[in-house]
Structures are given as structure tokens and as C-alpha cells.
Image (cartoon, rainbow, N blue to C red; front, top):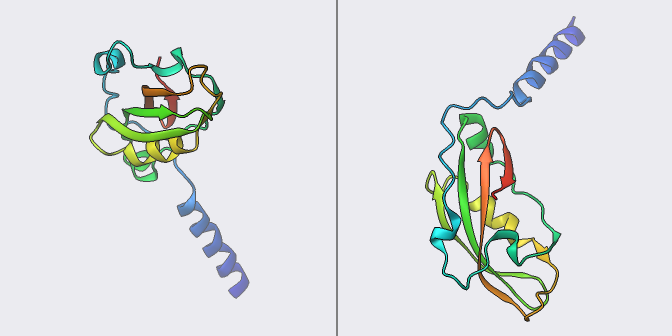
Length: 137
């Protein structure tokens, strides 16, 4: 009898630990016009960047459970070796909800070494939508 109770308890606890499907509880905010945040000589997204390692950020668990969606514009430099530097959030909606996840992922990105020795003020849009993360276009 004790064994059956333990097995039943284990199944009940396992059911609590599983992730429910993502259910949006907030509208996805309209994508920003990323070039509107940049100067003419800044690099935007993939225009000048050739990715070697580009893992998408994790969807923050609290945002996933709350059904929150949004986006982040990340500003970064790429040094002569293709390593990201000076990573900062330019803007995020909703404010701050996805910023940490975005910065942590961008920190690990690697690019082919830029032909001109480095790039500055690159901007990338990360969309947190429907429980997944994609690059903006």
C-alpha cells in the first residue's frame, strides 16, 4: 500500500513540474523600426555581420508562464576577432522583461572577423513571441 501511495505521489509531483503549452496573455507589441534607432553609419542586424555562433536567448520562465510577449533591440560592437563587446539594451517592450535573457545570449555570439577590423553600434532585434525567440528582420 505504501508503495502505491509513493508511486501515486511521484506521478502527481511530476505533473506539477511539466511545462504547460505557451498561452499568450498579452498581445505581441508591433515590431519597432530598428533603423530609426540607428545612425547612417551604424550596422543593422545581418547587413554586415556573418554569424559563426548565434544561439537564441532562452525565453524567461516567468514570462513564459505569464504568457508575456515582447521584443528587445540590442546594441553591440564586434571586435576584430568577431567577439561581441559593449552589449547594451537600446529598447525593450515590455521594459526590462526580456533584457537579461537577450544580453546573456548576445554575450556568447561569435561572428566572422569583420573585414574592416571591427564594427560598432550594431543593432539586432530579438522577438519574444509565442513562447519562442527569433531574430527580427
